[in-house]
Image (spheres, rainbow, N blue to C red):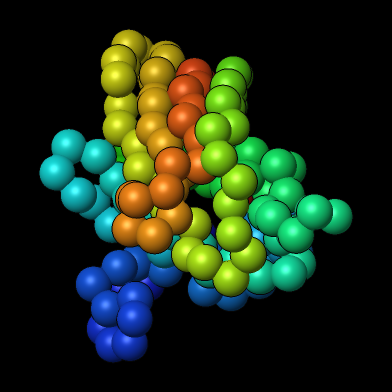
Length: 147
C-alpha cells in the first residue's frame, strides 16, 4: 500500500501509511504515520477507547499489533522490491499506556543478511518521555507475490 505525505495539520512532515481501509486486520488499528529520523524510523498512531483494556489502559494485544506495524515501518524502504514476514517478535511491557495519547514506535535495523532482518525499538508516549515497551524481532525477506 502506498504511503502519502501529510502536508498540513499535526502530522505535517509525516507519511501516512494506512490512509484507506482495505478490509484487512490493520484497518482496525487506525492510520499509522511514520518518518525517518536519524538512523531509524519513527511511527505513531492516535489511540482511543477502541484500543483499551478493561483497566482503562491500552490493550496489550493492540500494543503488540502496533509493534509489528512499527517493525515493518522500520524496514519500509526495503519493501518496494520485496516483502517480509515476521518470524519472531518479543515485547517487554515496561509501563501502562494511556488512552487518548499518541503512541510512538521507534525502530532501527540491528543486522541484515541476505534473507533476514533483526530489528529493535521502543514504544513510548509523550514524545518519548514515557517508556511503554521495548521490542525486538526477526523478519524474513520473501519475494513479493505477483498480483
